[in-house]
Length: 524
Image 1 (cartoon, rainbow, N blue to C red):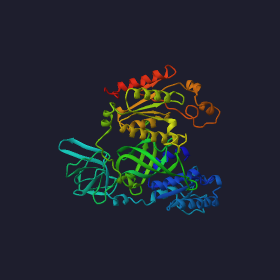
Image 2: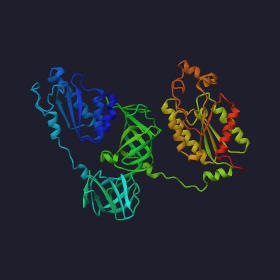
Image 3: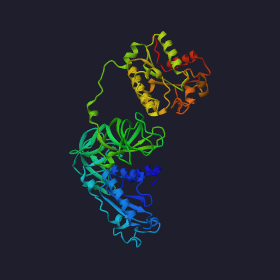
Image 4: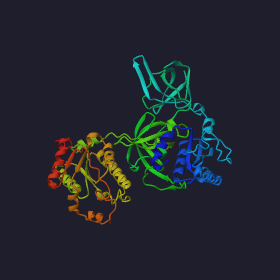
């Protein structure tokens, strides 16, 4: 298949037991062959058929077939594919599809259909694994019945079996196994059932019911293999939705450990993953989930990533293992909270996030707002885009990936200062909606005021106080927002200011008024 169909291949192969890899006899093993082979191995498909097609276009030459077999065997051994069958064929002429080919008397193996009809699939493998039931639906038609419905993803369950619900860890035993055809004494992997429990315990959609002897693991930090399936690159620090079974949580790629070069199997350093790239990453979630390593169970170890804005599926991943360090870190309770600190300062803590193009006037407005608030006796702190580059983000450049990380750091610092009871002013270009949304999500809904300094590009470029636009136009400054790097305007900010239509002092007054209207500035 063509490279742009990699995402289709991942989707289809995720439930397959065998894979047919098509190789053009004229071209041999290509990058896409290697990519699909690596994905087949990563997804866990145990049987691989290499169908060497278009043999009619190379005169049915046996040396061509043998050369491709030799090349692929070397690559398969490198990535750990053991069960490989090679079939020379011509789809156009029907050679070795259903019946043996008279044009290739030197080949004595099976046909493609012959292989597919006789390949041995270990159908009982999942039944031998520990019991897993991801809950798709809590069935409560009346006050006398409460059942937990789903398709068994592994193992066997019997009436009376002790179970544990993950991630909560609550225990009970199976009272009934209910199906459309009546109650069962036991059920196995692949069956859709509704279980009732002997005890009244809380079980929700997305939880996993497991055998008590070998329950599913729980964590909120993982090492994963990730296939990126979207035109827009994957950037560490950006928030996505992760869906595993029926459970949906917020996820962030905290680190790309390496990208895999599918030609050489080399581990390559990467700051982002492009379309069709395969990477090994660390992943963090906003809450714990139940899981198994993908190698043990596809259903409880595989997931997809979803873009929060478009709801498009942007990545598919496989859990390798939990990063156990997450289990040892807990939030420490403190008695003096941000509300108490704010009352002492006669204000409600908040983050005022000024965003806009370079030269729009963000820093000027933020500085004037801070002066006015200080004169009124309020406690503030100003985080400025240029200033943090001298310390907090001195190691970052201006690529999209570095911009995302810069805003992630600033958002976390702003949250800490908010917790100190301050009115936090931030003046950053912050060009991406997803990162501004990430900063907003760190605090409560009424603690974030987004101010779009909506100065037109032509006006900002005419001002050009630092000469940056001129450098960008001459090609001396790469990745400059508004010129060769995009700026995504806020869709619904709390305040929008066009500084081409008002003075900086008037703009600052508008911010002060917004703070008053949101109840931030309390009466003394």
